[in-house]
Image 1 (cartoon, rainbow, N blue to C red):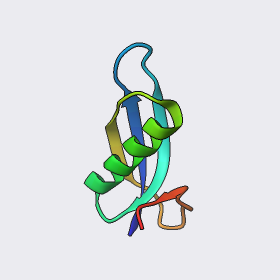
Image 2: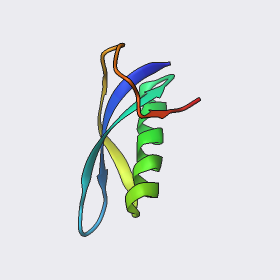
Image 3: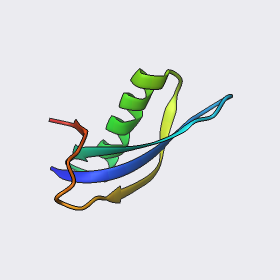
Length: 65
């Protein structure tokens, strides 16, 4: 699994943008995991806006395992 920095945005009013560091097998899985975590923490429907690989030494806060 690789670390990814994912920016997710809540749809609707009021909008909210959150950046999370997650560890997943793919960019798609990282986006889905980050959206699910943000939805659970903040409520609403989130969608991934930006996904990029983080440094390998980065400690992921959320792990897909």
